[in-house]
Image (cartoon, rainbow over all chains, first blue to last red):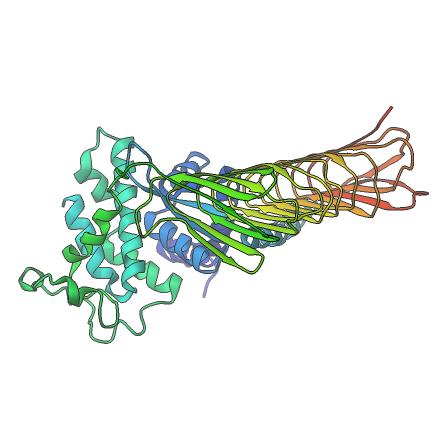
Length: 125
Length: 362
């Protein structure tokens, strides 16, 4: 086909597909890091923290992902009921989660570094 | 749609999960909705619920994330939402039996749910006991603070608001005392006998503090509780996820691990392995008697060393700065390092993005 033949929908679909593929692992990394930064945090607060720095995340992605991270033993979860207010489920990083985060963060940064060099080369060419 | 309708619908959609897991998800969404409504009171509940994904979307995500549901889906077709809930008898005996799964019984599931919103209203309880000949003490707790001090005999005092089911459990066998503080203990004080050989503590959010006898090996695991101990002689192994670790007078070999807690070690006379991800590490050695490793991903490291008998030193940081008196720091993009040789033992310090600051006593 001719190089110019595509519709806006084709493009949107391709971008969506790419985003779906690339996002899951990244989301996981972000959530683990967010829990680590906050030491202990509950789901609603994670969503708020991510929204503040520009990442919109739906409840439908966040909570199932948290459930999996608990199942995989990266996160620990505990219900706490304050004297006033409603119960909340707090997440903390486990020691396994700490080591896991440490490693995937390195992998992510290494990948990122590769891409930064690549795009810098492109600009200099 | 009301909050209750939404949660009922979600309960029906989550029928493929084991009952306790589904319960947990429902509680978490109830808590989330409460938070969302409290944060944006101008929107009102209906609008908040409108902004949430449809329960079927949430259920589908749980199905794909947790891989659950293969077994539970058998009798259920998509869209089979079954309008006959209300006619089913809500007989508690059937509820927890069989395969322990929900069927289309959203409202029924909310009995357990209510338990979560009950507040403790009992009277304060106390357990006080003494034990003889205890050499190994194991304490596991949830949120109770744990206070330790050396004493003439092994004794404990536990306070809290528990009922029969959640009362602390104490078990002695041979020279071993095993104590489970349970979820409702608030405070626990222990007097450690001179004959104590090993102390093992696990806690979720309770702090651990006090003093441990000379010679006892100490192992502490904490999730978010802080660990603040004076320890002399004996192996020390302390790990936390987010709790801070403060130790004084460590004479035995020490292993310290934390994800995001800060670590402060004073009066070290031992080998050391201290690792954190984002927490900072301050370590003051009186003497370095064995090889030591201090490592962080992003935390700063500050080390104070004796001026006599200096150890060999290898300090490396990827993007931080290094400051060492008399040491030559070699820097190139992506790595700064400093090596000093000639000591009997070696201290290795490395960090990805933290700064390293080394000082010698005057």
